[in-house]
Length: 217
Image (cartoon, rainbow, N blue to C red):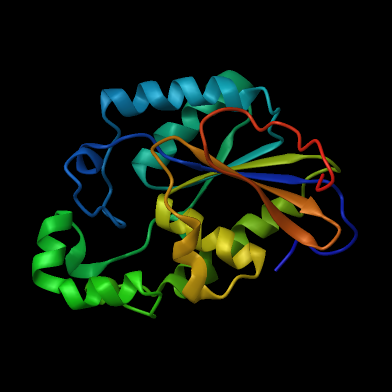
């Protein structure tokens, strides 16, 4: 999927929320509403100062508190109000939610390994990754399509949702989405609009994108 129409040089920044206590404990959050730690707030504040220099035209965020609080830091320095969408929540993972990584391996090892192999798995009886993309990607695209030429949209969401959304917007097969890798807390990925659709310009970045200088610009 792409933004449609002629290339307009728009940009989508997909920004993961700051640290939570469950992140530190390696506990699977999914759609559970967990707040930022003090460290998470500081991460969001620092990242917001960097992202503000990209002059976002619009900010959209998951309605879970960790994403709302992260987005609020960018609003504070840009004055751009964020809109919140349940469709941008993290993957619902059923009985996996609240379990540590080790507990998931112990109790659901084969299901976990199948997921890592790229198979369609309802982790913990929850959502498929494609279902997450089905709900999240249209929200991102609908807001991107409203941007002016050269405009920037910041999407504040969650690691799994961001990865599946990137995979969908790039037109990748869902079995290969895992190859994109995860995002650290308060890091971001950048999609740029080119002549043939969206391109991945930065992934799991914590500093501002640098221009591509060379034959592949």
